[in-house]
Image 1 (cartoon, rainbow, N blue to C red):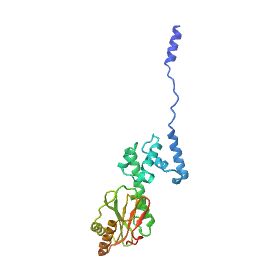
Image 2: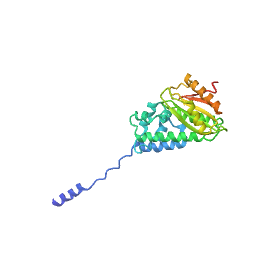
Image 3: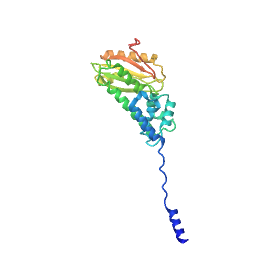
Image 4: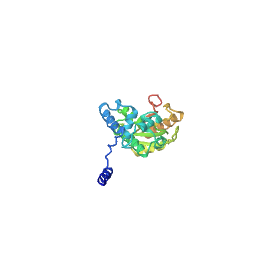
Length: 245
């Protein structure tokens, strides 16, 4: 009896091996999504799936599909998510600092790529690329931003600078300061650009008056104002095409 009891105790103390825990379903999902992207590219994926691919680096062990869908829902579409400010993104439940960083990295790279396609090239000849760059840089801004594209005598872009940032419907612009900067850069021509967060790209009376001031000051200095572009979320307007320049 004593021997049997001893053996029973040893058996009871023997560690049991539990089956391995199942892998989270999203681990395989990530690999499948990456493979699908490699096969079909951007056009074969929905907005939230492209956003998922970006967010994978923000949380390596978390299912990011629900958050990606929530961000698209909150902002409207992928473009709006990528153009959103940190403050706007923080309003969405589940968005962390890592998520915001990943979003802004992608946005910065996209803007750099767009700028590289027009910098030191003839802006007039690269008009479609210039419009695409301006849209990527400004269309999703929640406040007005005024930027100046400075060109040399061959109409090559030599500098792209944001000269002022304002409110949702106004940004202060000082024509003499713009021309002072143009002289400092030895610019021969300008293209000015600002956005309308309201979505309406039509120029206001103040936009027209400011443009006329810039044009007139530029004439006296031998600096040509080629165009004034107003960028909205869905489209844009050109003062030159409207006959305002």
